[in-house]
Length: 225
Length: 225
DNA sequence: GATTATGTACGAACTAGTTCGTTTATTGGA
DNA sequence: TCCAATAAACGAACTAGTTCGTACATAATC
Image 1 (cartoon, chains in turn green, red, yellow, blue):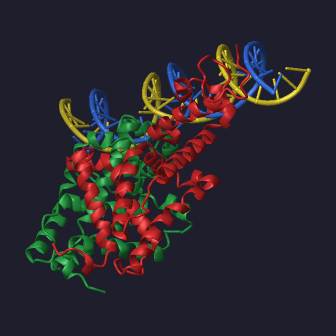
Image 2: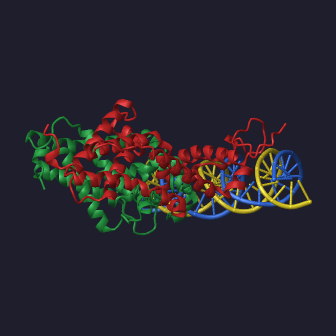
Image 3: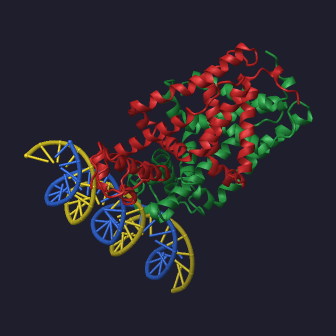
């Protein structure tokens, strides 16, 4: 019957003990709840109910509500950064690479609305949980590396303006891509335009790419019309 | 004693009846609490305690917690839009007017962090309370009017690129100025740079102005170096 | 005297976290 | 190879404290 494998691995076909699976299932459910309702708005009982597990297990694995929130936050950052790592700008020219980076960032933010919402919630809390996490900060160094590489190549080719700061460039790209998701609801309501349609998103993406390129590329290298 | 003045105005030295003052005082305190803790995070008892009034009065004037929240939201929008109306770009050239508009928006957002936080919170709630408010939507039409006027003048002079959409321009300016406040905490923590210093803010403001100008102004009209 | 404005005390429902006990797996010795 | 001992994973019910909202009473003003 029970195979004498050293460890039952993560596979759990039948309903046997499955710590990893339970943990993961709790985090999945909690992610939705926290992203939807915030830290104070989320209800442990509600999370527990939607879990395949129980409230007892939440406290068993995560200690308290804040512990669960932190686990969710770390998981969200890890997942998104893993996705970002898939961007390959290897053979591209600086211009194409930059264009590709902005497009990718725009789409990536769009696809991970729950992550954006977690970051918004974290900012409401003055990033105090992010500060507690040793894990998260290590994940973000690479983001700068990508833009830095592209930028330096572009400057070397005389195509990009010199003297710009990679972190500030990252800030500007982030601002456009983040705002697109974070403020869509209020912006749409205020100006009576649904910005979530694929058509509207295509326009905003093109604009964002355009804006970044025009900022970085030397003006005389830009098309006159 | 009690002067028979038509109304005791807002001044309440002695403890006399003062509905307007009470209302206003409640909204002031509630604004801080909601901006700090969100809708679910804010505590009515805490708000009441910090008021010159009582919890009874909150329910008397605002019905329930959501009613108070909505009043706070409307008040925040009204105050900020009133402040924006002070921007005068009358005699300026399109270029200077545009520069001034972005600078002003950047500084204005920076000065009204509580408002930004309310908008963030509202976006977490999918703008459902903003939608309920008839008052707020009317306030935002003018914001577009300003950028539209500047833009059209610039196009007429052959200085700005034609074919851009004022609402989209407003979106782009907002994105930069909003993100600067909304994501300062996480961005600072993640990249180990305190972006709230006046020096950092000056840089980010300059960059934002620069980015918008380079996007709108025809490339051949931009300085080569 | 009627309406508006305000203070105090309280209750019903909710919520984070705990207690106690059970089941499943693992280990070590005979 | 079997079985007792131990540890890890889990469930149901409970508790202590919180939180929104209200009932009741009173003061000021027209």
